[in-house]
Length: 389
Length: 94
Image (cartoon, rainbow over all chains, first blue to last red):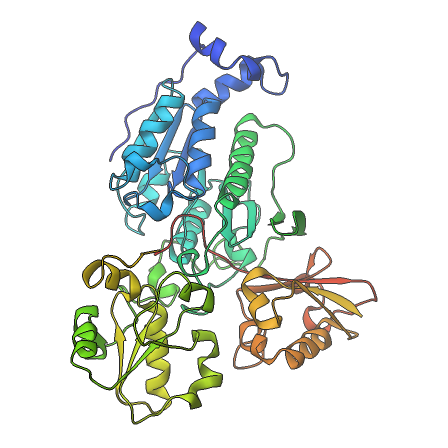
């Protein structure tokens, strides 16, 4: 994982000059700027929705050294938006397909690969060698980790985030400017805000936000224009409207304020209220596998199969004989269920249904189990004709 | 009367609207009126002590109310309030 010394190039080759022609003829970039790009070291965290346009445009622009951090493999559900990966790459490491694509776009760059999750143990070591960090992650623990590491190391953090039709972008921790914790001191508790996997995202949305992050990264390297510092850019794709809000440095910020209390990286899973291990499903006896549920149906057992997915998800697939109450309506409609009956909760992946089962237990239901893995696992192990999504 | 812009993750709780017109002289009054009209929105904006949650920011026009007078910030007719919650998406969630 150690990074070798990176010799700063003195000049561009004739092939590079031809390639970067449209940059070189602009006074804002010119030869001096293109050499800055070539000498620049940018770390890209995540090669997913945001990472896809980021990786391709930073490579095409000639950023000399690009670090990629990812440990995921390409899944068919990625291809709707992660345009750096192709159909042929399904099942491959994202690092492999992303770096292959980037080097195809531009063989004159160097890519450093970090096949790992970013953690409190490795973040400072990985980030230390780079000039700029670009956050293309999808979860709160990593976002706070990236933020704190950038503040501690004094590196700018080019931030972008997306949900459904809406995106946010800004540059944190640039020259002592505001950081992510100045904007949001704390993450939402788990379960209150849906993830992209639960809430969905318009495929082109990360393209727009990732391109803004790439633009800001290039501007920081070139020292051109006005960086997106102290301003939070909001993008609403449905209304097709950009808005800008003021983003101030919080003097009481625990990491970048006047009297910081966070001087080293902390446990970000704990900070975000997440258990170290997967799942808020509770003890194993509260869970049931799709195969067991299928056996209960086949034996003609009496139980309520409670599907807590949203109505539009039922159009994609549904389980035989299931009762539908979306998770958001469960509090209000709990009286429709009988505490004496046996209930199995189900959703797409087993997380929302775990929350539903926990809630039902809290309000007095005793015979509640959560179906592990949701309809996606059912489609894999019980009914291969059913679609996964 | 001020216009409150509702972000995507919270539209579910306000009949899927992207903005709501609300009466009130201060930010606090407007948020109170909004969450009385849409009760399910309340727990997403306020914690159990009735304080605005730390991952939900409110802006009067383009200024964060934490740097004005917080909930006591006066609101003029024609002002826009934006509710901007923290979102994490970017890479693929699971």
